[in-house]
Image (cartoon, rainbow, N blue to C red; front, top):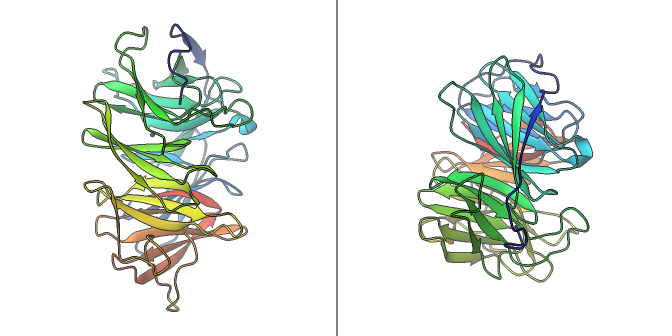
Length: 369
């Protein structure tokens, strides 16, 4: 799962009761078995389930209003969002029964990353969504038989790009970028700790350091958060490790010069999988595997650099991976987007080709179950 700190003197908390856009949508029920869950952000948007068994894919259609590029998956529930260009909505899909709910978020708020919060004593499901254009985090509550409740927590950053719950607090990933206007970089990114939603008491801002330009995504492992920064022309991508208990940066891994970070996933084996590209012409993102315990790249490496060597069925090197993750055995799941369709390529822990399968239209995130 980005602020000029303390520019705002107070926290604005607004409570808005908003109805779900269309409640439960009829969709094809996906199979629940080992396989990959893929987020399709263009074309036939939604979630595609690609079984490891080679059985037919299943798909939950999000509709033409969706344009999300990241998702969060927990216990068969998928969270993703559409931007201001497509209606500012939170999508909640249930892989166990194929249902989909859309929750309308504030207009022009430009939602980004979403996270799971604790389930209420009455069974209400709670989520948090980073709102890039309003310096806020939206807390969403879904209760059976009721409209969605959306609570805005202000003073969460100049451009909150992701959000997560850890160490008894809500954390906003502050990209420190002018997302509401020209996307100009104001300064290095930061984490903002929000322990209480109705006051500034206990709030803290953790600077991620000069290497953290435009943070995109964060994952929590134990007491540590790992934040991917995309980088800019003046600085390459980086992954920064933060001790959430001590509230200090304990290290950063800087990518090769000129590398732009695109996606990051936490694999089922506990390793981090980052896709990043050197330059944009052509755009050929590669997979970088990071060991969180050492904060170092893990091989076997390509001769061309510190990214993983992935060998195709024909014996050549995999051209690109638009998104990637790993399973418990260390196999790498790589999304390769064509002009219209996506292909899921699976490689062994040694980088050898295992299999390939269609994965729907253009896809931008992937995880395994």
